[in-house]
Length: 256
Image (cartoon, rainbow, N blue to C red; front, side):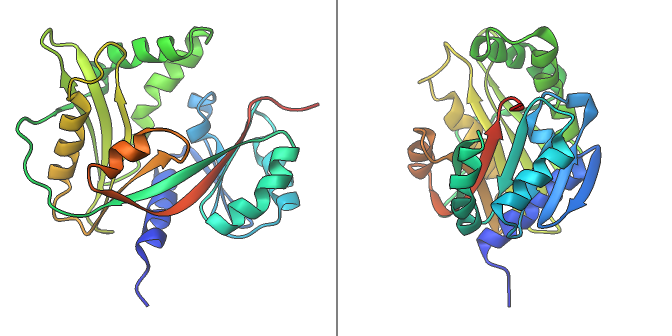
């Protein structure tokens, strides 16, 4: 039986995580991915669960595999498993976020103007400024790692492109990642952002339209959106439909 679109997105996310990770450890119900170079990045140091372990098993796995970190991060791809584990994990001090898996359908006409494919070096100033604005209390090494971790993402798929739109002064104003995997016939748009002071000018529309244009011909194009935040409706107006949910649990600091 062919895999559903939701299962295909899960398979892709697991494959991407494996490929970009410095260390992969098999665990019951999933994997642990680790990267000592980007130790402050939750994305690169977490449990990824596509099975159905119990909450007690998950808590023990997180302490065992992530015990060297000051935080814990668990991503559960199955909606039912995530919802079932939520009460126990939140009682143990984890914050709970629900992610919508949204796929694109409909026409993908060529945009009036295209975003540029850029290097991390070209994106770095804008990324650093925005991270500093979002996290004014963060130490310099945290900002550095959260910027530079994009180099690890380059390993995650056969084609990884950083797309960006510049303002009239040449400053990067909006950006996103695009991951293309011809073998799986799937594309993911990730990390769509617009810098403070550049919103409501259509920059993000150009980024999304360019990503969809480059992904034209792939049978499945998807992105993730926070279930509790406004961008989900912005994506919906641009042809994205929710097909499922995954769950992210984060404990910011180890509880003694």
